[in-house]
Length: 206
Image 1 (cartoon, rainbow, N blue to C red):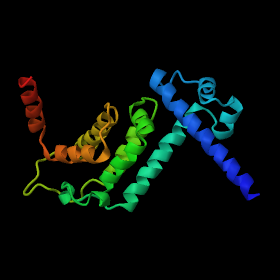
Image 2: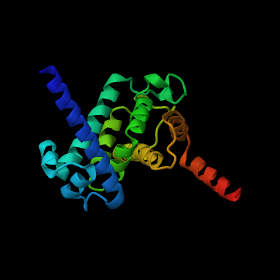
Image 3: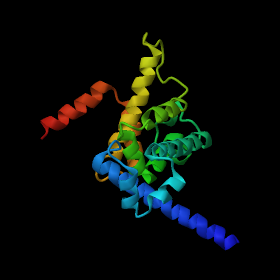
Image 4: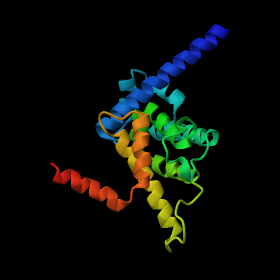
């Protein structure tokens, strides 16, 4: 009885792996809109009936992957401390929610990078909402802050983080989590003018 359950679970896991690999391969080649269950099943070397034992359709599959990533990230943010204003130092990385996020996304780089770029997916919006919950709680600016709409400020900050992550996950080769995170840390301390000057100086040196 126990062996039968183990065998069944193993087969289900093997099927899930095949489906995910086929999903990533086909989306990279043609996008989600052109994806069909028939193509997915053929590429995964399974029958359509087997696919429908796991998912209702391709939209159910997409939602499943999104929810899985969101659940995992939520777990990271609940488990690890929220980064404080002083967390922009390269110390205590293993105890930092954002660094753990980078490590997780690197492990899931093929699927996560794909879904963050895919127009049909809602992963960007969902991850932005999660990031809002772990932004530093303490302002680093001493003195009076400028009068600026909070909603715009929040969008600029969270979207900047998302854009950084998407750029990182779509580079070849993809940097390992630690160097990527250290670049991310440094970027958060630089002003737009400083970043622009870095680009200009690099172009002038070519």
